[in-house]
Length: 305
Image (cartoon, rainbow, N blue to C red; front, side, top):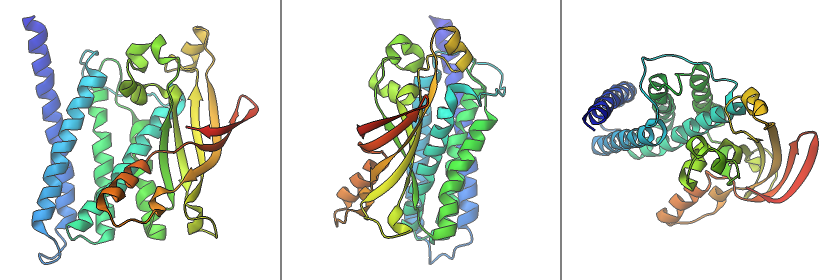
């Protein structure tokens, strides 16, 4: 019992060291961008609150991730691994999605501290890239994975999708969203695809769908509460590579979707609590009429999630 405990403690210290380094980089970049503001324009107390809360939340989430995702794998020396063809690229869309959402949320907080919108957008985009990219430190040192250049590219796409829209339109018109439904694949490989609902949402790519929802009324006359969404998913994946799936009698296939989406941000309310709940709910693609294109066929769903 002593050796595994000692090994776990050493691994935890390495995790903390890595996290401290990433937090230092992100905070340094943030401070360098903030430094150009005059003392009167920035509420230093609010800024310190944002930075402290972000650092604590980030460190806690990364520690939790290391326990949930990487605890079953031995440590190795840092290495890169080409996983660009695994899981039919759904994991890459996950990277882009989360990087975008962090980038989109950050400016609200920085503007609350008195920073102008353009500078807030830049800080949030850079920070989101580094925050999500720090996962590669875990991947690179885990025997089950390896750091991924394609993951880094996906992170850059997510951050660019946010800051690019702000530069072009000064608002977000194309919103990445996520939906999930449980599948019968997770119980077949619970160690890889998840053994409970919480794990399955993160690990079971068969049930994940990633969407780009266009706020059509920002381009032309269209109901403000209604968006058009295009989505991508994949099914029948027990293993990361298609070759491994086929060798084990499973034939993966890609799924493409087009359907309606509800824009909850269009609901007007004075309640900050309701606004917050609507913001969180708007990260998810709600069930709506959808067309699925897969395996050469078209299938209509009255309510797809």
